Image 1: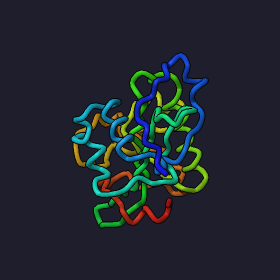
Image 2: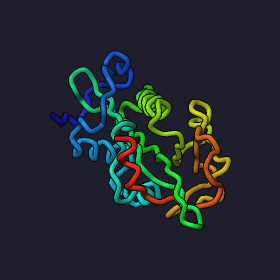
Image 3: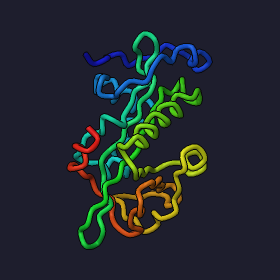
Image 4: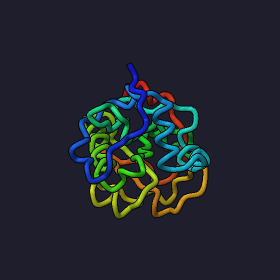
Amino acid sequence: EALKRAACPVTADRVSLALKQLIPLDRIDPQAVEGLLDAAFGADRKGRTAYRMRDGVEALPGLSFAAIDGEGHLMGSIQCWPVALEEPDGTRHALVLVGPVAVMPELQGAGIGKAMMQASIDAADSGLGDALMMIGDPEYYGRFWGFTADGTGEWVIPGPVERRRLLARIKRAGGVPAVGRIIPDPAFVALAA
């Protein structure tokens, strides 16, 4: 049964006591996740470039998590999406688009996002994703998880982005091409389901 609670009465100073577990995101009611995303990023979030990159695909269940407290209240979520880097000749290279990483505003800065990000990285490293990408802060995501903008400068994406924030973490032997466009990749879903 999907958890339906969206509001979290826990404050940031009590979060270490309250965070009980990370669970698969697909166990959470989608409306609760939408409410969390609106609270964290605003109702206009769907116009952002990252939404265009994943248009029409479902989040990867093996890489997407929710943080809940001991009473089942949703505290945060991380979603990962199947995308591909398509070369000019049409050859596609599967990638995982990481994010959004969302935490209830009153709990931000308490380590919930970092815990969810680590869970997704651990799942990816276990064989579910050897090439990750995201739009994010290079200082933060680089320091903790090795994301970098090196090699993404010639990637074409469907919207504006600060190039230094278009990040990748590639563990795949041989890497991925330096030139191509990022597109949704529904065929990838079966690999990480």
